[in-house]
Amino acid sequence: MKLNSSLTEEQERVLNFSCIISHDLHKGKHPLLNLIKLMEVALRAMSPGINDPGTALDVVHKLGPLLDKMVRLPSFTSVINARKGIVVIKSNMVTSQLLGLIVLPIRHYSKNDISVMIGLVRMLIFLRAKTHLSQKGKESLSTEIQALREDIKGGIANPNHKERINRAFTDSMPNGVPSFFQLNNVLRQYLNLCY
Image (cartoon, one colour):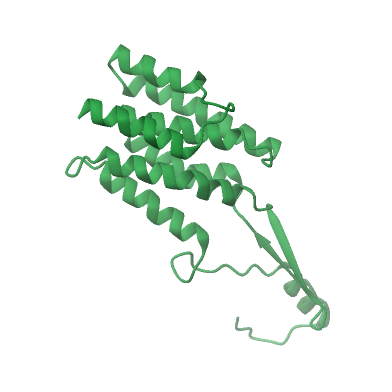
């Protein structure tokens, strides 16, 4: 930061208190970068030229546990540097931001594919069932699930496919919450029957 004149102690204190340092997500090892890359793989797989729902479905299965770890992070964390007298506050993405950045593009691009939509339904229900999630996080997931329902109404024309996806909202496997291994096996069996 360059200044034309020197700062008073009060101005320096205020500047130190309110300075926001943002790093480029596309450099280094920020965990969000990997989620973005996975999302981009799913989008490319669902592009008309490639049309590979199996790859998109694999991405959805990998995103579930990763998103689960990301939503566990607190909204803010802080580090105190006692020697310099500053507090560095780190802001983490909240659930609604993560869903908008990672899930929304996949949902939008895959809204005509039954297998990917079922995978998204199961992933979101899996995440919402987690006990460590805040009430606001659960509300964000419920909102995303409702948006997914709306996409299914408009994106899936076949009534049998709509019914199959709608069953995914209510069906549960042993212990109430399906594991991603169980879901992966069920969806792979379905894909083998369809293709």
